[in-house]
Length: 79
Image (cartoon, rainbow, N blue to C red):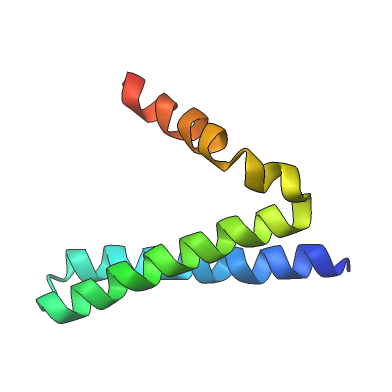
């Protein structure tokens, strides 16, 4: 298996797991410090996933980060 796919798979799995944990924490109405920790973990793993993808795809993705993020979020703003 290609090392790039392994890196992206690990980063993606960590990101997905942290978001699932945050959702479960919100559904279970955990205490505020735990909720904050889950939110920070989700944010950090999402950023790590983004930079892992950028590292694998190259510098052009890093330079176009703002344009990519605008394109992704614009689909949600229309609804």
